[in-house]
Length: 349
Ligand SMILES: [Zn+2]
Image (spheres, rainbow, N blue to C red):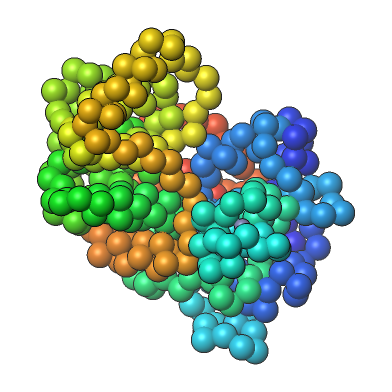
């Protein structure tokens, strides 16, 4: 079968090539790939900045935002042939640490977890893939291709759950939430916050186009510019850019007792020592919490499936701005100005 593979840490090594059929050791459920979403992590792996091949192999099958159709459910699963499924990305570490031991692998403490398409496990950018039944999430069939948005939705489901848990340390009745960044994660955060009945504001750099339109279509407010100029004091900020300036302004703009949840992974951005102390003082005097959030466990996958199932299909479909064929994966990895979510489509749905 064909797959998109890469030699991790070797820039320019990605290719669309013949690989062996997936080994039954990878799971009893055999799945036909329908589509795989592309994100910044995939770009970093292809650029040689990140990624690990499975033990004893030199190449890694790329892709962690999956959608597939069950070909063979195997002997012990409740799945049926034809079901649409998405594969959970992370597997608990083998030790396991206390968090992995209780199924909270998203909070792994020793970093020895593995991840499909990223860290020591083959990903989903192959014509067929296998998965353990307990790591296959069946999606609402009416979602169709939109099921490929489940993985990014899990990231935001976990982030919002953690904000809600932290909020309950005192009286917590949030009204206003600011989302920084109107990429797929930011837009899904706005959707989920809107479903919670919050007054949602989204900030990004662009002044026109699909992003502002999508925010307004949710009944949320779109802002172009800086967090500092907004004049908002949100109860929660979901930071999805990873940009130093946006992060420091978010920490200073958050309302009293508010929570800043960081989900973006960026690089650089030096905060001078004096400004760092000012930021800390503002957090102390307003009882703020700054929390980082990554990945998701099975509970978040389940809850994210419910969020997508409740969302307007037309709105969700506008998040997928480009579909590429697997042989054109290089185009899929290139960022174009109007892109929100690009998917590589392996089979018709
Ligand atoms: Zn662990």
